[in-house]
Amino acid sequence: QKEVEQNSGPLSVPEGAIASLNCTYSDRGSQSFFWYRQYSGKSPELIMSIYSNGDKEDGRFTAQLNKASQYVSLLIRDSQPSDSATYLCAVDNYGQNFVFGPGTRLSVLP
Amino acid sequence: SQTIHQWPATLVQPVGSPLSLECTVEGTSNPNLYWYRQAAGRGLQLLFYSVGIGQISSEVPQNLSASRPQDRQFILSSKKLLLSDSGFYLCAWGKEGGTEAFFGQGTRLTVV
Image (cartoon, rainbow over all chains, first blue to last red; front, side, top):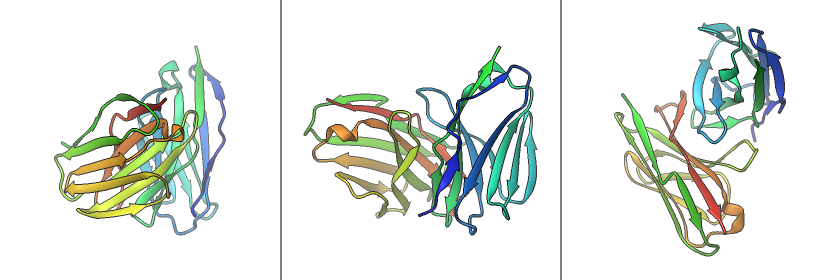
């Protein structure tokens, strides 16, 4: 059974700082990696996907993948109070479904 | 563009009553469909997934079942609800091949 691990947090950062969220996964064969944002009481929203080693940037978000270390991270630059949410890391399961980590709760303090 | 509809948004059901949650997708064909459950303060647990009409894979043995009577319709059912079935039920769709999944608004189920 594939496992995806995240620090549950809460991770608190001041407004304007960089928030760094980390995720590790158990299966070296995993090919696709995703970050979702989930506001309290709402459904998860896809914010980033990454498939190759290295960095992928989209606005204030940067996803980083290191397959050798089985590690994927999400950086949020210039953090805003509206970024306060739970961030879920997900990994594909042989292209058929997705395994999610428990999520990291981020709190951006004004 | 693709959209996913899931209803109802909230549901309160007594123990032992039946359950039927429906999910439909628009704007795509032959999607992969998923049912996840999220208990309070917990991560997402995959319940069922389907790669085509009538094809259902179950990840967690329990008193729930799923059906896919049409290409873009996915139904989650139970004959008799348990207290432990309470949670946030999420339907999601993904493109064939398993790249990315997009979630519906979810159904918050409380079994009393």
